[in-house]
Each structure stands twice: as C-alpha cells, then as structure tokens.
Length: 165
Image 1 (cartoon, rainbow, N blue to C red):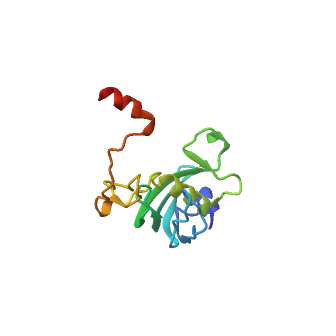
Image 2: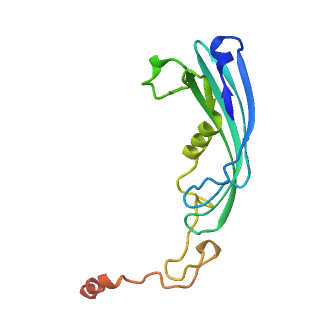
Image 3: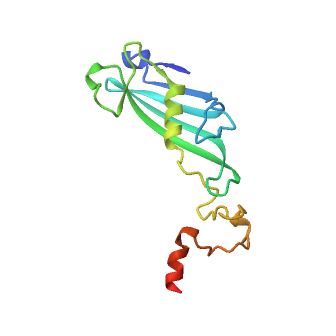
C-alpha cells in the first residue's frame, strides 16, 4: 500500500488513518514460510511540526517448527510500531527519521514488512523449557525420556578416562 502523505506535509489534514492487509506468505524466515495468514495492519499518520508521526499496529498468525524439538508450533503475534517521517533533506543523517523524499509517499508494505521481520525472535521455541531431541536416537524429550545412555564418552576422550581409572 502506497501512503500519500502530501496532505499531511502541506497542512491540509491533521491525520490520515489507514487499514490494510499484507500478504507475506512468500516471505522466507529462518528457512521456513511462517506467515500462514495475511497480516492485519492499521494505524494513523499525524502531522507534527513539519514532519509526520506514523503509528501502526499489526496482528498475525505465525507457524514454524521449534528450533530445539522441531514440533510445529503456532503462535499469534501483535506488534506496535512508531516512526517519524520527514521530507526535509536536513535530517538525512538521523537514523531515527525515515526520509520520504520530494514525492511525499511511503511504501507502507515494505516498512511494515521490515519492522515485523526485525521484531520476530531469532530462536523460535515451542516453550521456554523445551528439552529438544535426544542426540543419540532423535526422540522428542518433551514427550518423556528415551532410555538412551546419555553418559556416553566421546571416543576422542576415551584415553583420558583410562587415566582416571
């Protein structure tokens, strides 16, 4: 969605509400395509002393395998974002301000897509206390113990164990 901000920068309007859906189903994140539903986005752009303040809220379903046990996990996320937009070249070096250029339009889809990807956790776990998989047999340890001998000594260290005996 292309957001036309000319009326806000010129002072014709005080605010510009928006509501849209983003389809990120073709976006790969950590080797999977986790966005299973369209992302609902809504917010408002407000004129503020020669710049524009953009506030946006997004909500979406996220489905990905756990990084420890590989169980498919669904979660619902909601995020809020805030940006300051400027059409002035004076604030070019300020990283907190987004330059919209002389055309005074903003690609809202791309901005929200970047915000969402930066907000997602790098490690995705089914729960904080996920036990993962057994390194020997591959059983999901969240379902119970596997019965493997977990005290196996690395063959490279077997010589050191003989010194202890």
